[in-house]
Picture 1 (tube, one colour):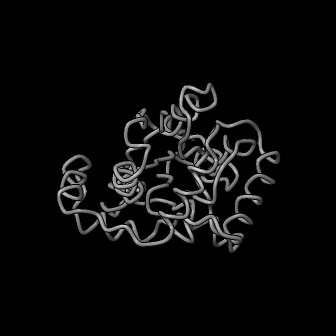
Picture 2 (picture 1 turned 135 degrees about the vertical axis):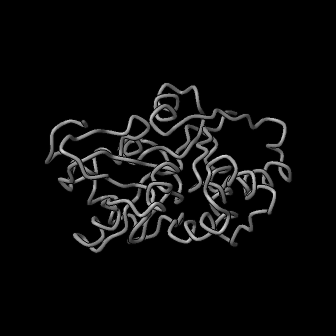
Picture 3 (picture 1 turned 60 degrees about the vertical axis):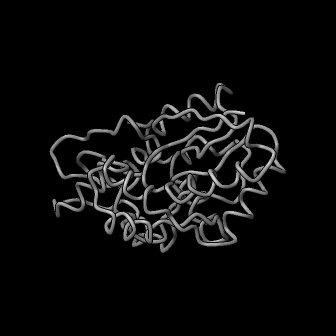
Length: 220
């Protein structure tokens, strides 16, 4: 079984959980990982080279998924548009590029850890999730945990992950800080902006996003 692992900070709690989950279950000997940015992971999943992953919402619409996602209730800090005269997409993203287009925000799209670093430098920006919430009073769902088979396994992962708050070991937090150049306190503060539960309101936000896509041209 191959799981698509996106090593952005927003999934750090989930990766900590999965490390423990696989050690305590029968999946410990069969779970392998493909590491890549969201856009590449999307392609691997759709071509069935990856069995499960957090797939960008724009590509997850017709896929099987559980009630786990990467969700911003209001602002997110790591999906931004830096102001500029030209519209520049982030090659690592698909959903965020479309969201910028739907919201008609001009500039350069930045996602993930580099966007968080940009935010922490207090540079001018538009937080796309914050703008979405201001416009629709709904969360924005950036990705969904999708799978091709083994529904019972992923429902079990959903249930166990959402049951309790994941505590990140100090050594993993230190490694993440060294890898990203973002301080440990800033990482923990940032994670408070990320939600993983695909509840009723998040589903409404997702449905609204899908309705908005046909109103604009193809992804830039």
